[in-house]
Length: 125
Image 1 (tube, rainbow, N blue to C red):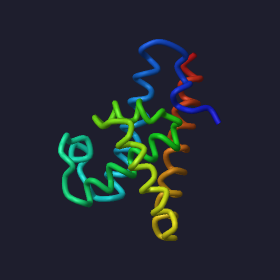
Image 2: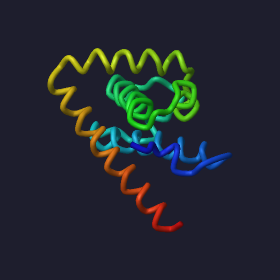
Image 3: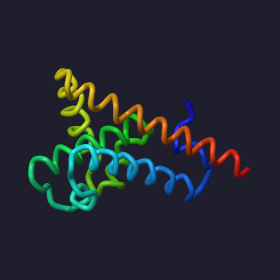
Image 4: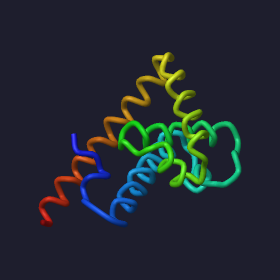
């Protein structure tokens, strides 16, 4: 499947698309977790629900949209090693069937939105 980062071919537009993928993951997780998007992007760690939401958003940006750990870190104002740690924690949490289901649903929704956006961008061309 074509990733959002490949919809626009070169230059600064790729960074824009990567940022859009990260923001889309952030918004989806914020809505699902009942956390404000600005709290997810905040420089401070925040309370546990915010930190968990940020970890899930970074994980989904990396896994669903194929963003590098470095790029995800840049989008969320975190170091790539922090993103790697977040992804490992979220992967471990997938052992819980409820977490697995929630992440699967978010992933499917994000992929559907990505596909819809890709189709719309082709219609414009």
